[in-house]
Length: 84
Image 1: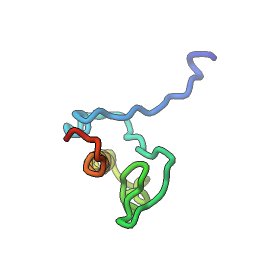
Image 2: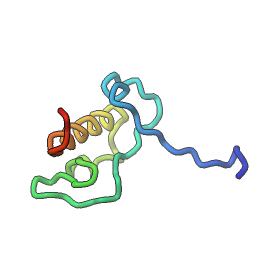
Image 3: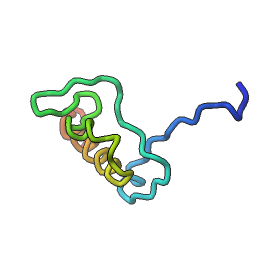
Image 4: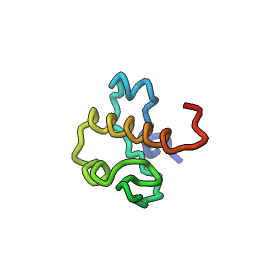
């Protein structure tokens, strides 16, 4: 494929980039296409709340980074194998 025609894939920021808000590229959705909300309205795939999912497209990058950090914290809290 011609290098100039390759699709540019968004990269997911690292934890330190999220916390420092130093990411300049648009924050990619953390969706992993396993979409099922549990009884607490949290997606079992990406760990975002229903409100966070539905409002994603309207959020600024700073708000998106905050959502990703919250989702990662929920994922760690709900993981019995997490070392934290």
